[in-house]
Amino acid sequence: MIAQRTLKTLTRAVGVGLHSGERVELTLRPAAPDTGIVFRRIDLAEPVEIPASATAVADTRLASTLARRGVRVHTVEHLMSACAGLGIDNLYIDLTAEEVPILDGSAASFVYLLRSAGIQTQPAPRRFVRVKRPVEVSEGQGRLGKWARLQPYHGFKLRFEIEFDHPAVSATGQCVEFDLGSGQYAREIARARTFGFTRDVEHMRAQGLALGGGLDNAIVLDDVKVLNADGLRYDDEFAKHKILDAMGDLYLLGHPLLAAYSAYRSGHALNNQLLRALLAQPDAYEIVTFEDERAAPRGFAQLALAA
Image (cartoon, rainbow, N blue to C red; front, side, top):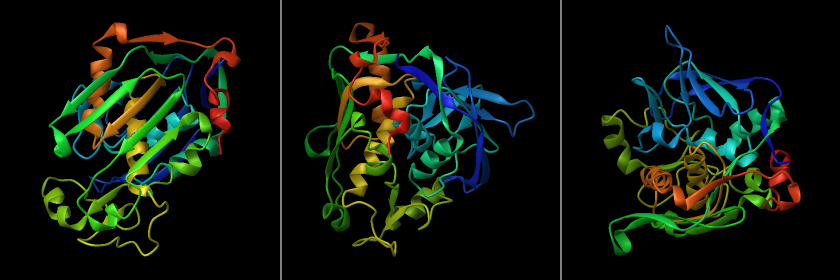
């Protein structure tokens, strides 16, 4: 049986929010089967739980934000990506502020935290959302257009193409394809950092965004080059970070996808629209489990041990 997974024990980290700049303590705790991934704002007089859900996404400006009863949790996508990459189904995420800490700007620190706590299989089948026919959302047309698509596939693979009018980005790989069944998430995707342009910083900060951003937790570019002294971690780090984000955004569905995702210039908003479009068409998907691991997609039984 492909079983659900949680952590063996709790683990903690302290950091700052990328956009809020606030100090935040993060605690990851095991959860029972069928709990799902639940964010908990424990800084409030009465803690509020916000289950990870596509319909709970309330804001997609530069990050994915969840909300419930007027309480919000910002920038959930990197931690959600790590959970997707390692096959974590059930988890409590306690926060002492309204934003998940950015740590190094990638999902690598979250992968480390999850692995350090240990990954535990549970006596319940893992439920997958299998896409049965194509679903697509788009915005604009031609070169200025954006789109994202889900198609039937026995497994989970992603293809993302970016296009930025910037010499340093244009000099890197613009298109990345990644198959989760390869077991290479931690090595090939998780270390890709978020990125931003100095020309946009003043505008973002005027909107209360990017207040905690810097060279230690993002790739920063001026008009011509990367400013980080250590350069890029991958030759195609910009496109890989978009894959990382998409994995986190799509995992907000509440179950792992069996589908091929492809996108051009997509982002958090379009990714969430794609999930909502899927949910609005019940004939486009089905919930499946695998009692026989041999019937599951290649590599899915070993996700928690992937290097």
